[in-house]
Image 1: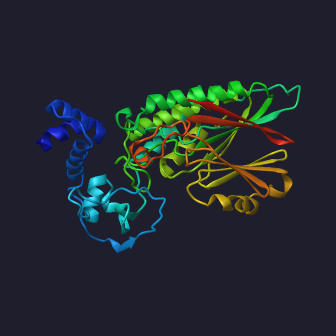
Image 2: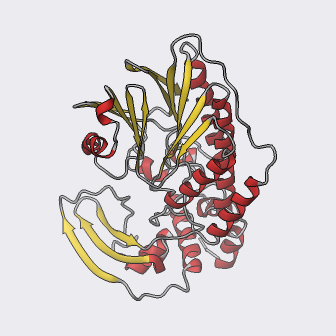
Image 3: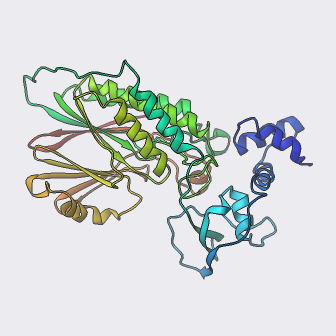
Length: 410
């Protein structure tokens, strides 16, 4: 089986992912597509992309050998096919990690799990993203048809708060049913989120909704750099370019919030997250700019990792979930929110884990929300499968706290 570099690069340069390029190359050459073909094609592309990387200015190289190493970091094997261990440069080339951004690294060897590198990187900034962001804000401010304030009638009966949180959408994620048993791409993502939010609205019609919290962020975007990596540099299988995914997310948020504003006034709580720490923040500020002339909507789009909102006797917190430990969140709420002592019912809505968690602590109920996104290659390989895909919502009574959970399962 021959791999011709020029032919592979010609396929890849047609704006496709490495996986897609490998499939198309195998089809063109009459080869059977396999994981070995995918890896070989990816290696050739990575070598081409990283020819200019130099192996200097790295700090604190260390090696750890252990039988009990436990890490939440994605473990990408550093073993070659012949069983030898890749150098740090080979490792970065293999997984398309920007080598020039590596600050420190540690080689971890494990008797059961092989070997992998723990990498700490400098902040990776998207190419020309700041210019793109500023231009986008200016264009939005010039839109003449932006929404105006809605004059509402006072409700005739007791009102409720609706919390809507489309968690971990991962626009730009690519899942292939050939490998994982299910497909997920931008088209499926947008369809699920729109259907899910509409489903939550329909299920809430038995309550008089006077206020809505829309929780934004939480890995709305799958990648944060033009090199198709998360903020920290972890490579991802992707659908679409970073800029088209950003614009798609912008349009999706505008449509969802506009739909919710037809029901009640909206408060947007933004949670920064690990896949899109930079671009997710930009996106939240763009949405805030779009609605800035409307009095029916308020925003909390700071970079703070935990947000709080008081609704009568309810104190509602939200966080992505990749930072502070779950058991520490109640005490953090008590320390950070001035409304702790003024509220009888306290809730924290978390994300990040893509599955349901519900636990009562002293004075606080914590819930982690399900995600509508599909299972990609890494999660399938490590056995993180079988969890219901869903959009969730919650109804809060002003005096009695959370009185309903609403789930739209796909």
